[in-house]
Length: 389
Image (cartoon, rainbow, N blue to C red):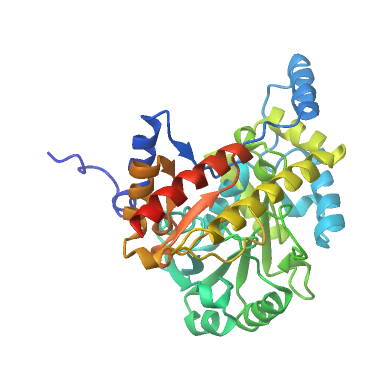
């Protein structure tokens, strides 16, 4: 009997991960500096933690409604109107165990077996497995460095057929750190409206946007309310990844479908986490501004150091806390280059192919790491690459 006996085909066909192997190797060596994190290195702000402790002592340890606490959904609705120009009611919002669960629920609600979701590639590593695990068909749209890693609306339209249900967009983008500009969003909105599709708009990094760039939610554009489900998260904005609380906002009937599914697969986001999220929204946003300021300081260091390394080029990150350098000149695959840096420089990076096949020739660097560690990591990287060259 093989180990695969009895295991579903949907699991066996999920893409593998070289990064898991690289991570395991890195964890065994205390000298390794990690530029791999996909989560903030900051601790959740103290006022949020203290509030949660108080609520825990008051006995808030029970289930919440599957759609999420009403007070939190009302606060999210206010936030979306003020910050994103998206006008929704509490009934058009669902609170979930992070925005990733919300994306999964929306996919389950809208995509039948064989129906298609157009997915950016390279893109967040969960997108493709998410679609395939519900037996949908993911259709990758290549993001090219020449286009600034922006979606090309003409290429999107070429991929649409009568089985296409959803276009998934991510801005600011993981892993590229780049953003979709208003003109592109408007063109995508026209295409989606013409073909009567839905858009999943993943905006987890909305608060970490730099220089003169501006985050625009496609759900705020005229005529898009019935076409867009917007996904946002407390994990990145408030350094709350372990609290597992995110949300989606969209047409009421879709939110109702997602809520029913939530009842059967997760029931609710932790009540304590929802209360902490409510406190995060209600109180001063200085903590968010402070984190953004520090990320930007680190970003500028990363940009400066990358320019000093022969053979590496990189578009400046416009948002998130990632850079996505081009390493094609070294003649190695992304995985081999990541292995090389781990072995020779003792620096952990993520191979670009973890984010899809069009990530080949790139690596992702995270600056959700202390400034001093980033500096030392680049000293090591530059040293081994200059020897290589």
